[in-house]
Image (cartoon, rainbow, N blue to C red; front, side):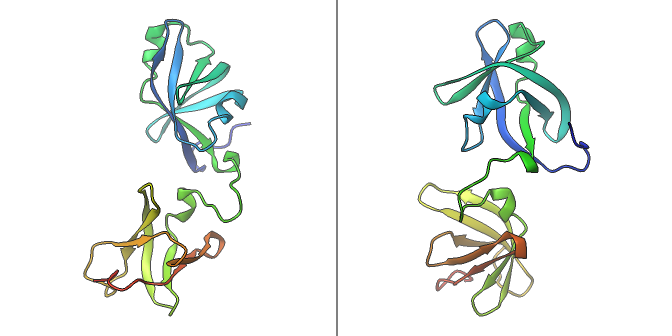
Amino acid sequence: MLRSMKTNKWIVIGEIVGTQGNRGEIKVQVHTEFPERFSEMDSVRLFHQEQFFQVFKVENSRNQKGFSILKLAGVDRIDEAEKLRGMLIKVGLDEVMPLPPGRHYIFELIGLECITTSGQNLGVISDVLQTGANDVYVVDPHPGVTALKEILIPVIDEVVLEISPAQGRVVVKLLDGLLD
């Protein structure tokens, strides 16, 4: 059963980036650590940016070179599939795949207060940069904390000591120069 489209927070798990073949299949750039979920889905919700578009039944799914190829019911020609290019596939918060203990989705981190071990409230996490070596929290500082427009906190064990989405905070040990 579908929940209200106005009150639910939606999470992007894929983006339609093209067509595959001439029978209406779509090529999906996967935005989830669980690409196998596409083969388990009975239907997908398509959005144009934030605007809900339509639910489609999934007739077939396969993985090909890092992409998911989906055949959606009612999309039978390449021109019909082409009209879906750029659409986002989203799931509700209650449909995200569980992560192992100690791991968090980016959407769970955005909005958390960043607090030092000495109790100084630095600001709010506004973004997470995925650099490859380690993630970096982008913190919008509270007035008077620093002259910087944003504080960049490396997500390494020596710096990020506690992540508590339920308590709305992340506890960090500041490295020298982070606020300069």
